[in-house]
Image 1 (spheres, rainbow, N blue to C red):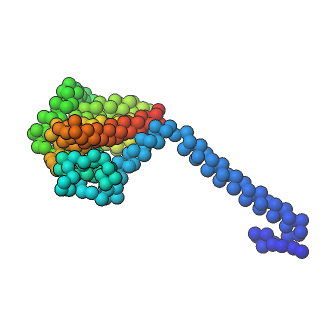
Image 2: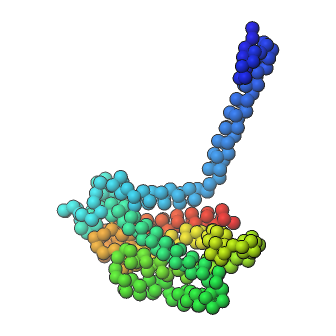
Image 3: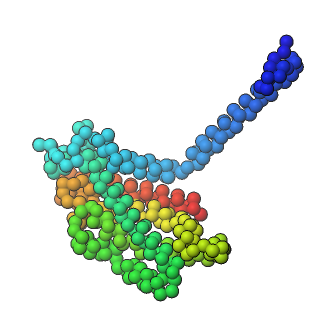
Length: 309
């Protein structure tokens, strides 16, 4: 009895048997290849340090708090409940209530949006302005480079907290103004790093070849110098994210951040310090949240640095 192969030709019994064996071997090869690929992925996941995995988990939870706070609590972040002031942690209020009867967990969850958005604004200001200054200084050189870097040195000579407080006083209170103030204090760090990377890339052979082949200054700058200078700058931005959260919480604690009753992590710590003897959780829990988020962000930024090297 004969059979047909994939091309439509008739096969003798022996040929059909060989064809079936070949098809079986091919299918087994693809199956083994898929299994080995899945095994390699599992091995990579298994090699991820537990500290890094926990850091990603913490950041994922906090981001979800900021984006979808209603999924995690049914309480309001600003409105309290009568006769529920300073209640200890319970089944109804997992982290207790504050002096106005507001659920502490709800205020922490809703405060994640203000704290994270402020950190993003701060890092964005430092990244964009600092990178632009460093790019101009490293590319133009000469007097332009000297003038920009002397201004950077002046910013670095001023304590960051003092500079941020001065800017907030000029701009006014609020999360956005506090974020801008924190971002201004990080401009100098981004500018110095961006300039050093631009100078290094500017001396590369492929950049000189791009100029030699007729490329204009701005074309070479945007197509070759800038993309190859951003790796270290982005790693610094990841590191600055945790520092920005801490700085914004510090300004909120001092009363220069979001005004009450807006939930913000630094403000929560400040409001609870007056009741630390009676309701210690009002200060301790928001402080622990800030520490965990900052440490998680720093751990993730360190992993970015290791991958880069």
